[in-house]
Image (cartoon, rainbow, N blue to C red; front, side):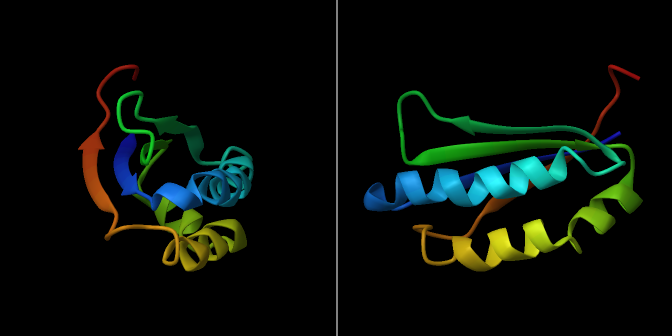
Length: 97
């Protein structure tokens, strides 16, 4: 399992727009055959900070995700909403197997 945790910080006045942009990406991602999980999380103490927890079957599934229209549209729209670049950390998922 290939897991990515993405931190995204958005402008205060762009929270609602960010949620809508990411909703389209989420809905597309969960339909992908290699997707195991795609959670969009909002920081409870910093409402402009979001985390995306993505779990895919393997690296090929991640690569396929990055070619989808919903992903490409999301990344394009994000630039105007963020306060800085996305921060990504990747993991090898051990459990569940």
